[in-house]
Length: 125
Image 1 (cartoon, rainbow, N blue to C red):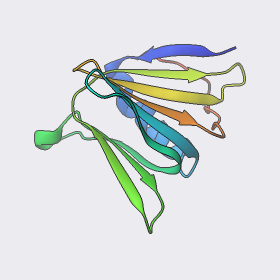
Image 2: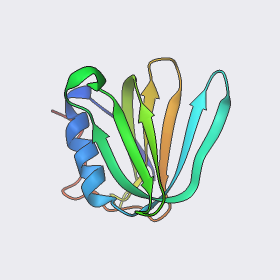
Image 3: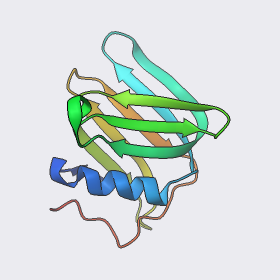
Image 4: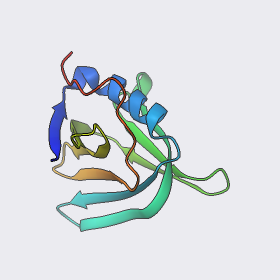
């Protein structure tokens, strides 16, 4: 069974750091859904290299996903994230995470071989 949770904004840094630690080099599919362009596939199969929430400066609050290898990488920036969601199964395997954009769009990151969420799942502060 799939369990979906919204992650409160005050827990974003924790979850993004957890994704960065647990999911490093796991293969992912990334889609961006927008009103203007519809569903756009960013990558069908690439290793997740970095998930980062900018804490300071003019880009504070921006989320960056880095995908690919050392030789060939791709960055996807989410300039104005508004909500974050995670989905895991009964075995605590992370299936996907999604970030809603404040313009109504969404970035969806799906794991091909899901990583285990260590210590269980709690979206409470």
